Length: 157
Length: 157
Length: 157
Image (cartoon, rainbow over all chains, first blue to last red; front, side, top):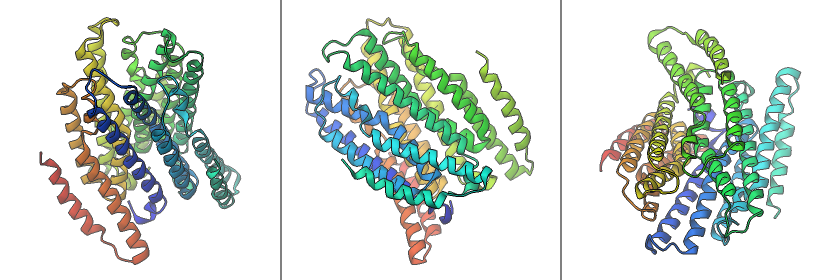
């Protein structure tokens, strides 16, 4: 694509690449742990690692879809920022995963707040587009400023 | 992105958001069911729920890829319509899931017809593009009208 | 979208469609194998098939994300070529899968080299964009030629 179009998405591409690197890190971790055991005796640690990996992989498409929709509909900088925070949360979740097979399920939605924020960005972007198209008023600049300010709230623990 | 580009994809974004909401609903359902049991004794109901959830998650990236390709290549309205029907079918599949661990596999492709329709839209869109580029004839308007009419056929049970 | 925009992505759409067809093929294979057994006695063959299918599905979103990023950031022809090689590798992996439940994990990253090549394309594309934007020099043509030549190296076993 042209450089003009790349301008609107290159931060999203960077976050996507980072998430891919993280996926590969998770997979290598599982692979390394696996080689230390034989196939008959899965230890509890290994089960936990597998479970954490599966939970992360299950939410991955959802995360990617929301990230790109938010970035395209409204503004890429807050979306990429929220994406990086999501990756940090996922890293902490994976490394510190100490649950058992059932306790892992509640962790399925470990980045609820971030996914909610990104979804909200999509909705605001679409409402703004509809207002612009049918009402003639364009609040995109205000909305983008508010979104950038609001994205820092995600840093709160 | 500009409003002009958003015009071609905002229905797809809406369907994607709906599917994300549905994913979160599935995950919360699994989480709620999980808290009612302890981790040693998985009941058969819980196994079924987990299995239904995994089947839905397995097809999710495939669905997203086909939805967006169809919407971008040909026309967004029929693609978004087919996507919503897919979500309804998935909801029915998840709620009414009564199979056992092996019978769940046949349900893996529960939205076969819709995925086939979306794939067909992609192929028609690309063929139309190639005809336009190398043959000089543009059937896009006819094809879009036919597609819109054909998408209502998906409503048949 | 317009034909001008479709020009830059139609090869990616074709590869995506091929990968969807392959996913459906895998799912039908699992479904067929499943009907030959009853639900109580999973044979070792069936377990292997399920495991191979899950490994393929786990890497699928990662593959799609990298493929599209590489195709959009730099050039679609080498990205689509690498994508097709990835699909061939995946097919060989699935058909010839003879591992046991633990040995399957190392196979998680069966297309490491191709994913690495696609990630490299993304990074080169973004660096080129930043150079163009802030330095004023545009190496995109050179980079695209080098990438096309380099993509043939993926054919090496």
